Amino acid sequence: MSAMILSIEDLTVSFDGFKAVDSLNFYVEENQVHVVIGPNGAGKTTLLDMICGKTRPSAGSIRFKDLQLANMIEYQITRAGVGRKFQNPSVYEDLTVRENLDISSPDKRGIFNCLFARKDKALQAEIEHIAEMIFLHDQLGRKAGLLSHGQKQWLEIGMLLMQRPELLLLDEPVAGMSAGEREKTAGLLKQIAKGRAMVIIEHDMEFVKSVADKVTVLHQGKTLAYGSMDQVQNDPRVIDVYLGH
Image 1 (cartoon, rainbow, N blue to C red):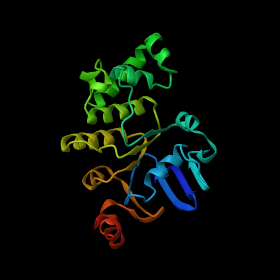
Image 2: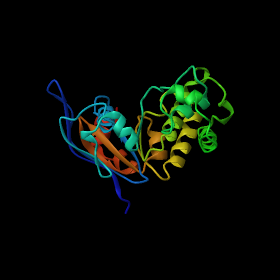
Image 3: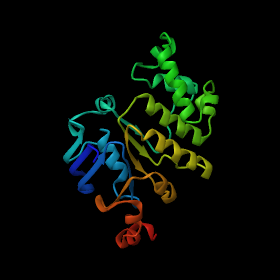
Image 4: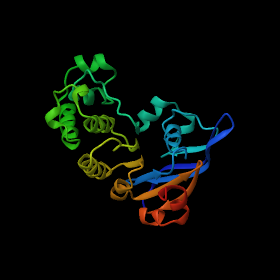
């Protein structure tokens, strides 16, 4: 059995008296792709916000390896090995693909250092390798603002990989992609899952089937179901509150 990399217990957050996440228990093992699904307003993005430090929990524990993330702020959590991709791709549009990857390295601190520091051969080899993985090797010299939506999604995943995270949090990584792009992204995520864990929020059930080791269904801030994709999609409660609609 794999070791647990993320252990969330009794996690709660309230906004003006409304519990967006309510006494949630959630666990992710090393090298596991754990997909979170559920209707809008179920607390999915709020869960990621609390793991990465964007939102402070009202109560509960978020343990990443031997660290208590609930006591840390965003940049500390990033440096500890947790990478977050938001729903809409966030890239530096006036910089090239290579420069976007370069600036994302933990060895760099800020745009000025990225553009004017001595180019390290090992770092450049890493950039070339990741660009190949994310299908953008032939776009390395192109400005990110000229990429398609799907390519920007891939670039942001590559920027996360440059941070060398042990846990990746991905919010709807195939939103707005074509069928072909979704298929390529599924292959990419399965490749990069070797050696790191992932928590993915997604609504595309075919995509979920292709990548998920485990699936948690959230409803009203609580776990409605947990298991394999086959188990949760055949659960009458899940069909009633989510899949059936």
